[in-house]
Length: 68
Image (cartoon, rainbow, N blue to C red; front, side):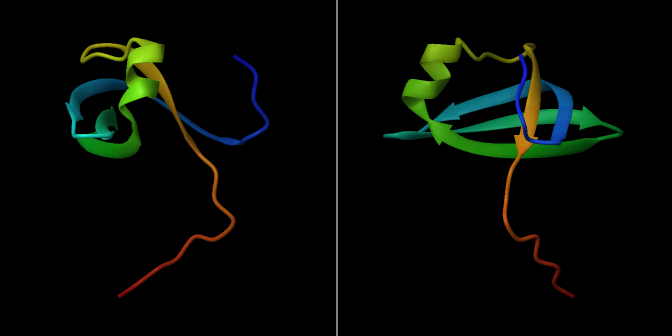
């Protein structure tokens, strides 16, 4: 897969939780860090996502906010 986004983080799916229209996909990116992606159920089905799959979390945002 080639993509222009530079924030690509490899990991392994640990959970896929489908809701009515949206799913939360939890990805273990190492050292106990979990990244959660909110995507459509249709995308989960199209990609055939399931726990144990090796995936790449791609972060594309125009702003990154920090709070304290």
